[in-house]
Image (cartoon, rainbow over all chains, first blue to last red; front, top):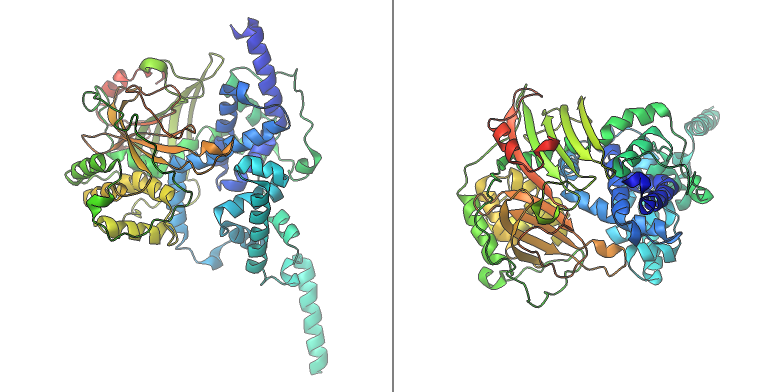
Length: 196
Length: 390
């Protein structure tokens, strides 16, 4: 019985530590790559269920988080085969018919995420790991299975593409609404003044 | 423009509700995996890396509670697959024929590794010359698909799509009746507006049983069952492939995506002529392999088709190994699907190995309420080895 099995206790203790340490990190990883919260929850569940089953293979900290990210990558990819991904595929197909002007929410965020989504997959994953998961290039290389140089190149290229894609932004778009209104008011005042 | 600031602001995790490891949802998930609540000893409360913690916001209990039910509903919203299963009235008892000398490729030299995002060159060679190793089997499936009657599982007003599926976290050795912990067996009822109901069971790793049942209203946009991805697709394999690449892959052929579409949503929803063309298209796709006949844990025997995509040689990322789909040779419908562990060459024994984690499609049909089941479901359930979970 698990209650009297020292191996079980050791295993459970180690898993508990792993779970508590990285639960939020894996959640964040999932929501950055999966549109639906429900699907992200499923990814988290699958990642930790895998970790539980393969606990002896999980490396010691700090590599354990990288191991979990590696599993998460696999789980996210696997979701493409799943019902949720299929459903999302149809949803995306439907979404293509929706005019961009109807998109709600933060326009700046939407445009940045759209630019990120348009990156090549390897570049997108590299910049996500480095910028959002805050991994070093060496750590990202471990997760991605490539050289550190390759990560650096991918991140460099991704940043270049993003700069190009987001070049249309001007400072007024990035300013808070209140500031933007003030700017507009100043422009209006100056226009009136010049007209007067 | 400050790119770093833009990226930080746009970080989806900043706008998502992510609760702590001590939250109710996290505890419930832990209990589901391990079978017991998280122990307070050992790891204790994590000392989260400050740089990462700075990214994550505190989240309300209300939101966590709102999301909690969806954790166990996840598969419920799987409409398309559900449609998929549709054809499936898969007769699993007794499988689809006697097992034979599976592993057609056993002992063969491994094929050329598939590169990621492999771009397929158009070839002027004859189709027969381009048939891949799985070509003959896929051609046979194409012939079966062409002769199947058109089926529709689109729920109308007041109707629900019923699906019974089993998601195993590894097949029990020898086809036994024990489910590995974390596995899920579920029945779902889904309306065309996305509302529905789900009941299911999942054995915990501590010997506990997790039973869940929930209903939900429309989630997100209504699902247009009439919008099926196959509409307008040609029935000539080469033209079909070009259309898929153009429509779904942005003009750049990617074997993995093509394979997923051809064995997934397109295969499930398309009319017979398109389905037949999908199989013929797969028969010429690089990297597609026939792994022989395999009997799944439900006793169903099918032809196993895989796409190898082991382009990455990382200790971790090599998990992106193979996509495996098992087809019923009598109906051409998908019986099981499963991503596989990283193995350059898979050798499947006749009985599905325990390391494979199949998603088994069992039954689908249209019913008139969230409590009704298709005709014959009770008899079907009685034949499932895991019936004690139903």
